Amino acid sequence: MDDKLKEYLNKLNTPNEALAAARAQAIMKKRADQKRRNYWTATIISAAVICLFILSIRFSPTIAYAVSKVPGLETIVELISHNKGIEDVLEQGYNEKVYASAEQYGVKAVIEEVIADETGMFIMYRLSSEQDLSKYKKISLSVLQNGEPVKAGVGFSTFMDEETYEFANSIEVVSSEGMDYSERNFEVQFMLNDETLRVPFELKNKIKQTKVYAVNEQLEIEGQRFTVKEVQISPLRVGIQIAVDPINDKRILSFNSIELMDENNEIWSEVSNGVTGHGTTDENVMTHFLQSNYFREPKSLTLKISEVEALPKGQDYMEVNFEKQEVIFAPDFIDLSKVEVYPKKLRVQYKPANMTHYRQLLGTAIDATGKELGEMNSSVSGMDGNYHEVTVSYDIEKYVSPVKIYFNSYPSYLEGAAEIIIPMQE
Image (cartoon, rainbow, N blue to C red):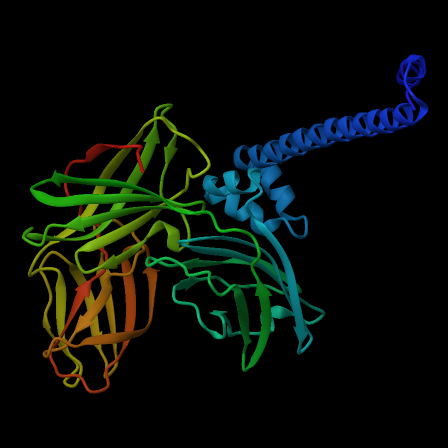
């Protein structure tokens, strides 16, 4: 007991019972105050360490490389390096530790932690084995919720080009319709060649609500009109919902540069990797995702849009006959080197206006009856530094020729930019 506290209590002119009670209460209060001070000191130190850790990764490639070699940290390093919104998530402790695991066929899979919000999830996982994991030439995975495939897009990479005994990465789940967490039981299935390793896990933390700001302001670039309908800010990403005017004489393929800037000129832009940077499209309404500033409280936000990909309507597709294996129509602006039509596949070699543009040229395919053909797989590659080669195959059962294949992306941009102030009232 503190000597000064003991001396003070002994001098009090009170009954013994009251003195004992007071003494006990005072001692308990003092200990509680000490614990509280120690707790806040530890919390402040921990927060400072986390902040310093994150800043070191963001601004020092050397430190980032060194930390990425520490088991359990490489996936976080990768996320922080490409997405400063994840910095805020970690600083706020919004990530949920899971550590669910399963082991089969000599391979152990661990779901380490999850970041979840109403737009989707980041799932950090690890595979390890005493055998070389790169021997599994076909590693795929899927995410299930309550026993059914999750109703969202799932992005991942399992690329291993050398001998590997431990592999860590993340799974990005994106739902443009919004995730439903009424059922909290999930499962990641790892398909290792012909074997399946299942890792069930349950989310317990509270999911933060998305902040929605109505905008409904029309913008115009080079005569092409579009309306920014709303801005949706969640912990993982910011969704910018844009409606394209159907009477435009050009079809907008993509908004390649969208940025949010606060009153301090800090910018939140598209993530440079993953689904987050591309967003989703539903007819004339597009949702583009940016890095999140959910845990900030900006006084104002300015939305800037530029580098808008667009092609003249009527020149925004190729037309082929898969049965006759021939090209019926191709626009003149594309420098085609070779086009090969197969019964279920199309291969195109072309010289793009920008050789650094590696997004898929070919997209939605519509047959003569208006039926959309399901895309089976696609690839993009460079050739000799002069041409790109794109290959896409379709599920063409019960279709009617000819088939129009609309361009998904091409480096032809509208001249100019547009910006608006986002009202900060939900």
